[in-house]
Amino acid sequence: MRKIFWIILLVLPIEIMAQGRVSNFGLFPEFQIGFNATEKLKVTGKIESQHGMVDKVENSDAKYGYYHNQTDFQGFLGTSINPFVAITGGYQYRLESGSENSHRSIQQVSILQRKGNFKIGHRIRTDQTFAPNDPVEFRLRYRISYEIPIEGQSLDPGEFYLVFSDEPIYSIQSGESGLENRVVAALGHFSKGKQKFQAGIDYRTDRFFDDAFRQRTWFKFGWYLKL
Amino acid sequence: MLLRIACFFSFLIPLQSLAQEKVEREYRVKAREVPAEARDWLDDSFEGRKKVKWFMEETSGKESYEAKFSWKKEAYSVEFDLSGKIEDIEIQKDWEDLEEEVRINLGSYFDGKYNKWRIEKIQLQYTGDPDDLEDLMDEEEQEYIQLRYEIEYYAEGEEGKNLWEGLFDDKGKLIGRREIIIPPADNLFF
Image 1 (cartoon, chains in turn green, cyan):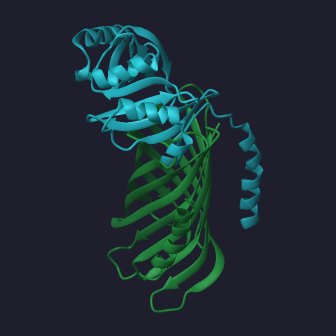
Image 2 (spheres, rainbow over the protein chains, first blue to last red):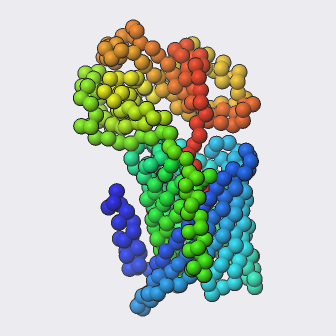
């Protein structure tokens, strides 16, 4: 168990920083809280924040030093169609260093599958980002996540689990398309039946088709609370 | 900026204490931690079985050992109390494996109560004395054995759209049921 954690924490970012054109590494804490406002209406709030530690452009020395990249404040209202499917709408306000702050509207459908010992989560999301002086950016995203219990055949309170996810994102802004991919590998702990703690690597790649191919690696750690 | 964010996170930490206590837990244990009586019973009853995975199961304060393994191409789950005495044998089955009478009774119950339903998982549950259960496994003798069906199903009806675990008798008549609440999975969706 401890070995898996150290592999995720140390080895993966070092490997990633060694290759590519534009790379960075930083810390990515997040906190999420959800509760049922009524029998049908579920409310979710989330804060996530990116803090850069290292930047590197190919053929030049890495720059070490702290900087705040961005912090997102998100709120969602959703309803479950059945125990496995939910539809949700949300809003995000982003504080961004070096750029104007932005607003985002979000729509998503989430589907939970139970396959043997593990859970599979499908998230289909569209969002629209509004920033001063910029055209609106439209994105279409699909994320597939696997949650795998480590200690038993089902994830029970007090147990550890692994999460792997992949999310391709298509974006379009003023007729210009972009592609991004996000891979997450994390170790989690399900505690007291109401909350989860996760820590792992969030590896993002984009600008695939131009010279400035970019890879961003975050050590992501989060607390997910259900009241 | 960093200070503001740190303050916000630390302000929310006391909310952690609102979380409730667990009611069910299952985790792996080593074979040597399981009472010899349970291991011996398994060896006598399931000759040629594949590797056994042992679990400790805690349900609402009750503890038991559970052995999970494949035997004759079927998934078995055998539960023992803490002294090593067998409590029940569960075998995973498909709908088509059930006797016609049982399928008809189950179908009548589901059709009568729900607009739409779907079976998620079926387990045959055998209970009885250790010797009788051993005879059931190695000689297929069903005398003094109680058979029940533990069925996990999704249903839509007057009560809404829910996931249930129903316990049915050997003819497929309902004994009891409880709603299954899927543990929170918001970390996969936000």
